[in-house]
Length: 601
Image 1 (tube, one colour):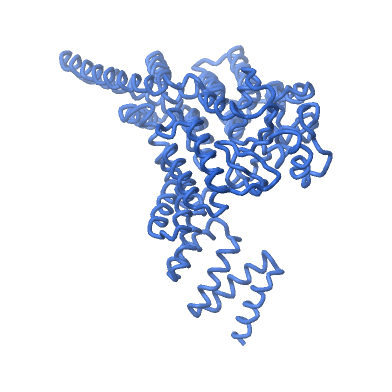
Image 2 (tube, rainbow, N blue to C red):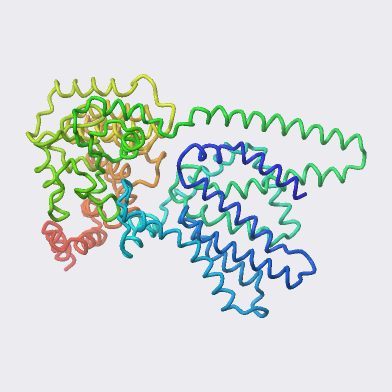
């Protein structure tokens, strides 16, 4: 049975997209998957020791737990999400293996903790390497505080502890099922369910517990927001093992119940043909799907076209293109004269690359406070070197009045250039040369970067009230990466500015369907209905915004005014008083509160 399950599990998993699509990229998920498989193997060995447990064998089992503790500490250097296994690890050691009354708890856990720390000491590499001032040195983790900031991923702490809103869980469960079907087909999913029912029927509590330890922590953490299958690789390992058990059940377990030899042969032959045909097509489709993804930096050609025309010694502020341009420069030696800076380094220097003259010798790093760094940098460098900006949507405001569109990168012009038709046409000409407007990128990584940059450029034109130009960019972003809530929302906003409310509503509703966890399309729909005097619909969507952001002042104010018009004074007073709790100096709201209180008297 064990050999069959192992063979079937390894065969299916080896040819699944879950493994292949993450083996083609320099990411953490393949190594995380390796550690997860080791944990399962060691757990099974130590929790199923067999009969006649001698002292020497018990010592070997304890050594297995020490190895597990060491590997667990080491694994956290691959992906911190594995920290969610910690409670289950201690539970298994204490209640399943140790049997509290029979062993020295303090001594045992001290040894386990020691070996954990030995593995976890892999993080000491960070300050040691950082002292050497490498090119990639996020957070500069040379002090204890900066090391803890880096290890704990403090920059995303609020994001990691966020609670999913509304129907996001239902949507993500559906997404997860689609991943399973894509990787393993309906036959694979059915086999997994058969394997699960078999374990429940046999009351294999320990094995079910091990599978639960591996399955649920990453599933419950990432399912809140993650849209890629890479987050769920540990769960796919469990599904694969269940598929192996399920395949053994229907091939070996059931055939023993078939009395007639001829019937048994027909049964086995039919199943074999079905399985071989199904998995042959599944594996071949995966191969065809993945064969064009061997080059992770597929964006390199676009990145080369983006910087090809840049003048010598240019400075480029980047966000999504930071990795791509750095790869070209640091790995291929392409355009070494260009200085590539990250916008994030200016906005959050404690978490990203520290701006130092020793690291960027070709530019002037002003010695000023963090608040003054951006303007001071531009003042001291803009007349020395040509500076370019990757359009980034919400961050364009930092330099918006100085931006001159020139394709996928914008030039920073200290004269605050006029955005006329000549500038727009030159920008569109550069854009068409840098990307193929007639063909969507084959690689998703490339599509994401291109779509983000195009949408960022569109946001710039939207802020300039050039709505038709902005609309063209958002349509192009949607064509490159279809059905993304962000771009559908931008299309809806633009159509609303163009007074085409019906089409605007359609795009905003599509945006909500694509990404129900964003409040922006709800807010935009509320504003449209409010402008059309459809107060009931506006009220519904403003309340929806508050379900995401309870302190959203614009929504509270609008709801207060709508309630006032409806004669619901108590409700209106509640909304206005909530605003004053957030902003006690809001004079207009104070007047409304005083008026409503006077009416009550």
